[in-house]
Structure formats: C-alpha cells, structure tokens
Image (cartoon, rainbow over all chains, first blue to last red; front, side):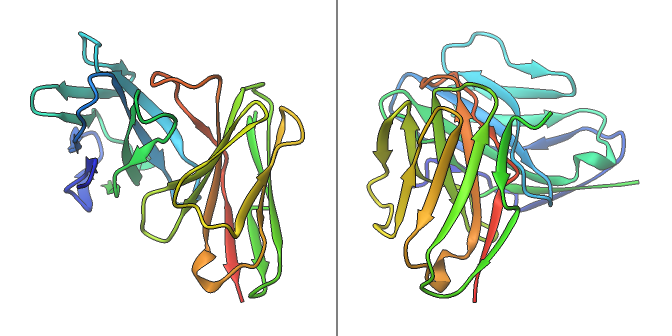
Amino acid sequence: AQKITQTQPGMFVQEKEAVTLDCTYDTSDPSYGLFWYKQPSSGEMIFLIYQGSYDQQNATEGRYSLNFQKARKSANLVISASQLGDSAMYFCAMREAQAGTALIFGKGTTLSVSS
Amino acid sequence: DAMVIQNPRYQVTQFGKPVTLSCSQTLNHNVMYWYQQKSSQAPKLLFHYYDKDFNNEADTPDNFQSRRPNTSFCFLDIRSPGLGDAAMYLCATSRVLGIRQPQHFGDGTRLSIL
C-alpha cells in the first residue's frame, strides 16, 4: 500500500490565486513528520514546510501553509497568492519514527502558474 | 550560498563503466543521504551515513556503494552501471536523525548511460 498519495498529477492556477495541493498518508506509527518539497525543472529539492504528528497548530511558512487533518490523514499544502516562480513539481513526504531515516515521497504534483 | 554541493551536474558514462558521483556539504551535518530519482518518479532512498555509520536500504542493489571519508564529503559509486541506472541522483543532509529534521538537498547529478 502506498504510504503517501498525491492524487493530482497536475494543477493549473493563475497568478495571485491560491492553490491547494492534496496529500494523504498512511501510517500506524503515532509519531511521524510530514514535509513538503518543491522541485523546479532544474532538479534541486527545496524544503518548504514541516508538520509534526503531535503539533497542535497547522504549520505556516510565508505563503505556504499546511492544512493538517490528522483524523483524515491528510496534509494538504496551500500556496497563497501564486507566483510564476511557483511553477514546479511538489512532493509530499513522510518520516515515521519507527521506520528510521527513510523519507517516503509521494509521486508529486506538477503545478503550473500562468499570468 | 550553496550548502549541499553535487558534482558534476550532468554525468555521462558507458554501460558497465564505473562512475563516481560526489557530494559535499558546508552545514556540518551528521547525516548524509543518497537518493535515486528516475524520470517522473519520486526520489527513493538508497542509503545514508550517520557520521561514519553506513546504513543501506534493504532493496538497494549491490551495484551501488558509498564512501564518506570525512564529515563534509560523501561519494556514490556505481560499479557497473546499467541502462536502468540512468536517473537523477540527489544528495541530502540533516543535522541529526529524527522525524523533525528536514533534509537539505543538493542540486542533483543527472546520470546518463550510453
């Protein structure tokens, strides 16, 4: 079974609009961390935001916020006021305390921002 | 300021010819990781070092080896590359192990096999 599911292969949004990228996860470990990374076409992976399983508040980092719904096992990334430079592949990833070091990635969502 | 540096950005090698990819870091992080990312797929962890302790993922082929001569450098050696090894190879670091630790990635090395 897939641990991280990103159901949107591609998303299209206009500049200045908000966009939500979906991520659901599957784990029986009560202690885990959820990450979002951005990968532009140049290839580097850029860390965006982190949410811990025990965190009470939803994480926010500038224009990025994480809509964490623990009971639903979802961790959607919200990008407010999209910019052309946001066009990239976005990966949701999880790290489980019991599983050790592996950062398990979803298949990614390609976001295209148009003017 | 580049903090995780991978060289080269693009590497071409011949089928069966050994190749080494390089990663260095200026973050003084204890943990270094190597991921393989094939076209249109998610990155997959190959192995990691915690200091000098090497940890191989169970399904990493024997063809892939790694060396970490000091804190700053880590190498990925592919002994006999096959066509299926063509991929982007990503190096990452984290300060320590732990679920809260984000991993900081380099720009990757794109490996092509002729």
